[in-house]
Length: 260
Ligand code: NAP
Image (cartoon, rainbow, N blue to C red; front, side):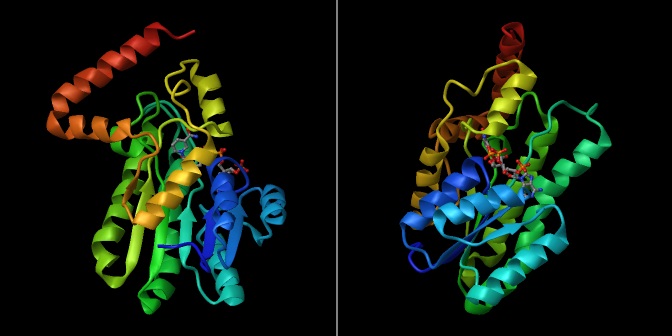
């Protein structure tokens, strides 16, 4: 899909990957780019910079998504491309407290459900629309040190797969952005909390990831992989699941041994 004259919404766009997406999209002359974020001031700053509307929005609350969709449809009449990008990280395993599991489930999974629930009707009526989910390589390959993150990203990927299967023949396009490390506040926070640097070396600038998204949308590819090696790892996992698990255990132990 071309971006020219499209109405595009990006969540989590005050910072990081979302901000890079908003900045990149305007280059291709869309009709509008709407910047949504929990941080209303941050969203406003990005909105002013790119000449777009900003909306304060907590994507984990369905009422906020309803308001966002309504405001954009009232002004522009439609939403052509919705980038459901906002996400959070939570580390640990089953010992992570329920409040954290519930919060990451709401932000990393239910937000996409709310978006689809309220954006799809208009898209289906027009037989055209594009949903882009920022997932993660963790959706395909898990996360060795963060079960809540790996689990919710796998669930998000599964939900977008379902949308592509159920609505692909009705004109709805779906893509999942699945990068490894991207140089944002989220990655910096993860590195400082884990004290294990396993994504920093190959981490990409958000602008590089945004270029990959624009290409993925143009090509209408389901998986957008700014780190091409993720496709190899995914193949290896499918080829021999037990061997892949052994490799992941070995890698995890090596990383723990080298923790600073
Ligand atoms: P980031 O720099 O932390 O930016 C995320 C933005 O989303 C922030 O502006 C944040 O606002 C906002 N946000 C968080 N919770 C929200 C909510 N409930 N409603 C609305 N906005 C919310 O992170 P990022 O690295 O750009 O991450 C963007 C997406 O990429 C996430 O889905 C993440 O899982 C995914 N991803 C990141 C990496 C990486 O290495 N960075 C790799 C793979 C996938 P506040 O700052 O106010 O909380």
